[in-house]
Image (cartoon, rainbow, N blue to C red; front, side, top):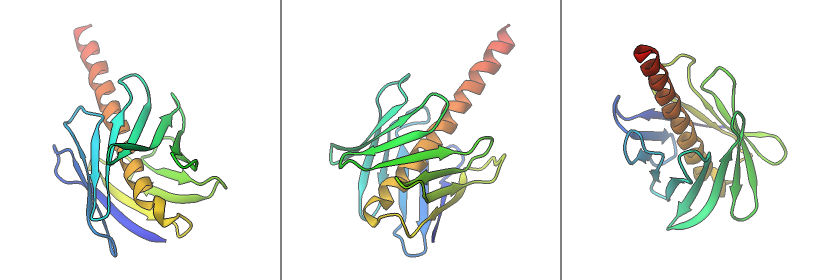
Length: 169
């Protein structure tokens, strides 16, 4: 099992760094605080994440402008990551926690993101299984971090709207 750490570069920033013992540093950068579009860069790869629409919970993953995967999130459920070559991974967020995991077609956990419950800092760990094919590793790590950060941003916006309507009521 390989251990990676990830964290938000600064409190108000839109950049998330990923580090591992044998890995080159990589980063996920959102266009702006309320954007659902981001770019992941490392020494090996560059991926672009693009939302398919504000109310559609589907996201394209692009490499050099070509779609290589699509993440489709159910309204209150799991996400299916469909790779263009036909492989699928299921991304599951654990209820009432900040932990996410990725299951392969056999139902085995190949990647797990952990973060302390009720953490007010955006940092955590990614545990990469030896069962995860090397060709999919960066794609899955960046996609799960992207979806995790995006979900947190949407939650914050919902809380702000709720509080706003409670105040003006």
